[in-house]
Image (cartoon, rainbow, N blue to C red):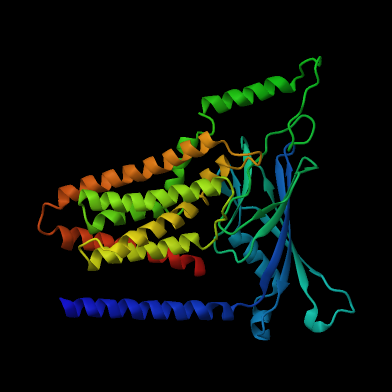
Length: 393
C-alpha cells in the first residue's frame, strides 16, 4: 500500500512538472500579439443595432517566420472573437467582424519602434425584446479593456475598465424618448404628464412581476454560475470526515472569509484578479488529494479551506449575477449586501446538507472509502486541475 501511494505521488509530481514546463514555453510560440485595446460601443435603440469599434495595438514577435504565418489582422480577429463576448440579457451574440490595418507611426519613427494599429468593427442587431447589454471579457484575456458606451448618440458619463473574467456594467437598451440615456430625467413642478410616463410605469410593473433584482436570488445564482468551484469545495470538505464538529469547523473556515471577501467586493474595497478561479482550482485539488491520502483532520486542512474561502469569495464576485446586482455606482445598500450573502451561504449550505445526507447513507458500507470517497475525490481533483489549467491553454 505504501509503495502504491509513493508511485502515485511521483506520478503527480511528474505530471505537474511537465505541465509547468509546457506553460512556460507557451508564450514563446506566439506571433503577433495585441498589446492594448480601447473600445467604443455604439447602441442604437431605434434601429436596434449595435457597433463595437475596437482600436488594437499589435506588436510582432522576435520570430519573422511566425509573424508571416499569423499577420496582425488575424491576431486582432482572434482576439476579438475569443476574448470579447457580447451579451444581451445574459445570452451570447456573435457579431460580424471587419478588420482594417492602419499605420500608427509616422515616417520619422525608427523601424524598430514602429507600431501597427488594427481597427476592428463588430456589428450586429440587438435581439428583439432585449433589455440590457453587457460585455464579458474572457478570463484568459491578457489585459484589461477600456470601453466607452454611446447610446443613441449620447456618451456615458464615464468610461469603464473591464478586467479579465469580469462583466461590464449593464446598459439598458430600451428606446428612450428624451434626454441622456445615462441620466434620470427630472420633471419640473407644474409640468403636465407626457407619454413617456406611462411607459416608465409599465417598465416598473414588469420588474415587479418578474420579482425585480432579488439580492437573495442573485446570491443563490452566483454560487452555481461560472466554474461552480465553491460548491465543489463544499463537497470536498465532506470527503475527509463526516464527524459533526470537524465538518462544522471546516464549513465555518470556508464561509467566514468567503462572506467577508464578497462584502468587501460589493463595496468595491477589493479587486478580484483574473487568476482567482485558477487559485481556487488548485485549492480544490489540494482539498481532494487530502481526502485521498489522509483520514484525519489536520491543522493545515483548515488553513487550506480558509484560503479557499477567500478565493471562493473572489470567484463569486466575478459572476454575472453579482455584476448586475452591484452595478449601481451611487452606493450599495447594506441590506442588499446582507441578502446577497444570505443567498450565497444558503446555496452552499444546501449543497453541504445534500452531500452529507448522501455520504452518511453510503458510509455504512465497507466499500465506502474505496468506491465512493477516492473516486469522488479524484473526480474533484481532476475538475479543479482542469479549471486551473484551461485559462493558460
